[in-house]
Length: 153
Image (cartoon, rainbow, N blue to C red):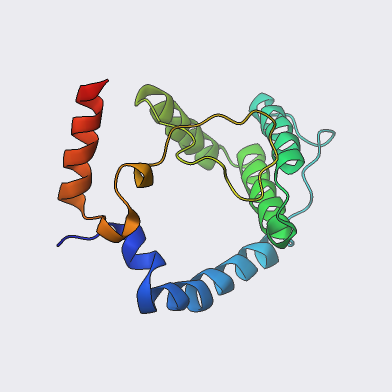
């Protein structure tokens, strides 16, 4: 039986290893490295898209209420904004990625309700877990059930 990536990483012995030995040190390193950058502000930036990123950051922080991840999200937005502002090489690639996301029909919000998220009236797409319980999740079964679900609509 072929397992989904999420089942490999999020269940069994692999879960604690990924959480403790990979994710935790990575998150600490991201926060540490971001602290070495000067703070980007609306006053010291000039790229028009950076002001959109600042607005998104403000809105994100308004809805995110997991205090245990605040430093991480602040660091991630700081790195994104700072890099976009000062480095045309990465700015071009970030723009390209966003263009491709828009062209390819990215499906937002795969799960409701989302823990630690306070956006009023948040709307999303029903999770695939509603179609196939996680315990039964193997790629062929999910594809078959999702295909059948779409045909019923």
